[in-house]
Length: 490
Image (cartoon, rainbow, N blue to C red; front, top):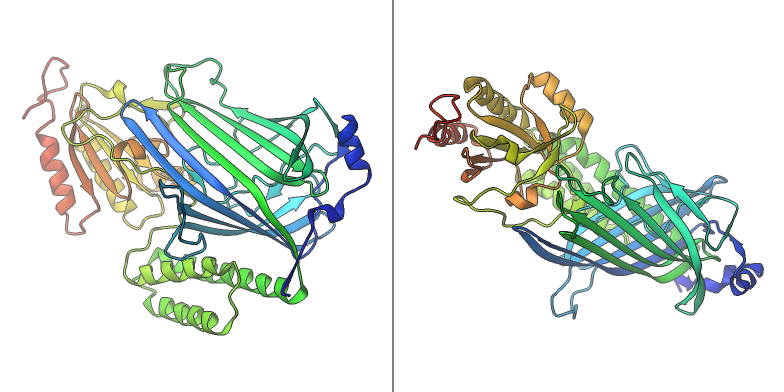
């Protein structure tokens, strides 16, 4: 057989079940072997029910973890996460690995230390998304405190610039025939317990059933709640349920073929990345890369990591057609219809990358507002932002202009501000774009002085048509003077 079943009980340490039975303490560490492969399967559901923003999305999710190597300081692993929209009827006829079924494919190489903490290269985001489905699910790993853990013990784990994630061992339970330790983790924004009128709040709760003989989760449940400003009821909820489906110790040839496919998928991805910045310029390079991918697909046996190579192939083909996005999607956010032209724009509070603090839309009532949704890595971004700056300078004190970045790369955003000489605010659109139905960028949305949507402009015409259309519509809503008593002109 290409693989042999790696029985979950084969690594049991005799003292651990006794500790569980008597409610004692346990030595919890990840216990991974080279060529061990773990497969987690489950679902993710997200719902919104606040104000105008209402939606419901459901996904099937699979995370496959292969242990590449086990150096003395932990383990090097490859993590592949696949996402597919879940049908409303519940029955799923299409396999999750089917190319036509997938809405997200993400493969990354990570390191797990001896306490279960995962790390990656600087450009690989690992934070659990507060909006949308996780495209790289690493909840199987829990950052442990080191040493022995007893019932009632608490510890904290740091995650980037977010508040600490507090863990607590609550007891022992049987999951899938295995005795596990139940851990509950909580992370929340500073204002979750004391709602404020000028910002939204969120709370994340993780419930993990951790198998002592593996040092990894056998079951994971995650709930993320979000509240609108000054509200106590949650307006958005995300629910993840994930279970360990299998754990195998692969034979030598099976492990080697998987490692080769993972290495090749990451190499193809890295070769494609610089070509996407100017695909028209690199046509021959894209063609050469596609030939190498086709040759590999024809001559190498398929493994469960093949979807990662097929994803690179699709993106390279899209680049040849000029349709590729500036970077692979690393989260799945619900794209909503949002308010239509003639309706009042949904209020929002957004982080100000360039001025500090946050900005609220309703504070701009009284003057027209131009919202420029953009991606900082897009080729059209400098042109679009220069146009926004021209509007800001041409009509001083007569309108508001805001750049709405759908990426949270704060350093890049501030660098672009300095290089382009921008003097209008650049805001985070991560939690806003769904409310305005922004599925792609650039997109310019024009509001009148009462925050009523008066124009929407998707894309950017190189001949200047988009700029002319925006300014022609804007002139209809500009006040005659800066006097607040004057109404917008039609």
